[in-house]
Length: 362
Image (cartoon, rainbow, N blue to C red; front, side, top):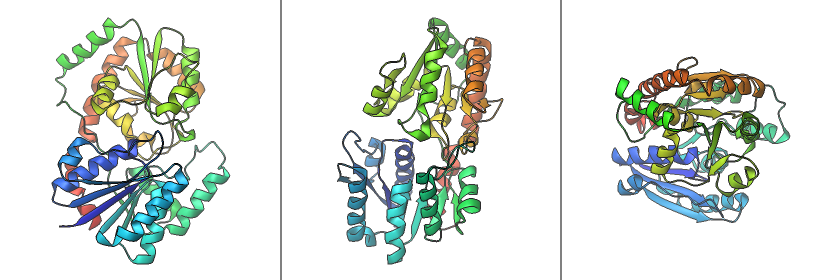
């Protein structure tokens, strides 16, 4: 029985969803799986009930800041890391800690960036922080194996970072509900939309420069009262960021509440500067919500242009496109059906099941 330790600084974001899913299916396939994560004030990490029921062990360290969280992760790894055959780090902070310690101890180390911290909008200049993040990735590139979550991340890891060992285990969607029933399913969505007096636009994520929430706020301010704007996630910072706007914030939802809220939307908007492979956008399309996204690294891996949504180059084009489609119920209905069929064919869980442990042996 292989023993796997997943390490992350938070289980509350899209990274957390990916870790939950991976740990769950590895445990179901016979692995002894543990997850090491950090609790910080206002950022409560937790595993899903399904993962806990499957025997996944959760190890939490508490820290008042990100730096102290990093130190706490390092302390636990130094004392317990030798117990595991595989150590899999998720996101930048955990990736640095695990690779630095694992490289000195000869551990079998794997690292999933879920969107490299050194990525940026191609039209923007790299900040000092981005340059520093890139330098760190270059320094650590030969330690362990990078497991990318999508094609763009794989290419960046191999061609730009220069890692000699890169594999891909693409993000997949796991939400309740079977395949949509064609006309009947589309009619049900149309009926729900018709009962509302306003179209609903939604986005999901934390409040961070990478997500570019100021664009979403700008759209909400300029679009007018005929459209509702929802922001899901982000905790207290999201409520504060959108305080004086018409954006309705749902800072913390359970998984069933999240699915129910997301499914009620008409259009999903991504304003992100970059992504690994955006799970929320994938989930939205799975539920029949087409996407309107900015062309950015990683984002187009999760959208079929012209089939499941539209990609634009900047805020100005997004504003114009939103104005033209948000009131077009025929277009929204057609794209809704196409989006869900495309997403459920593309983000199938079957391939993930077959690869969730073999990825360490490839």
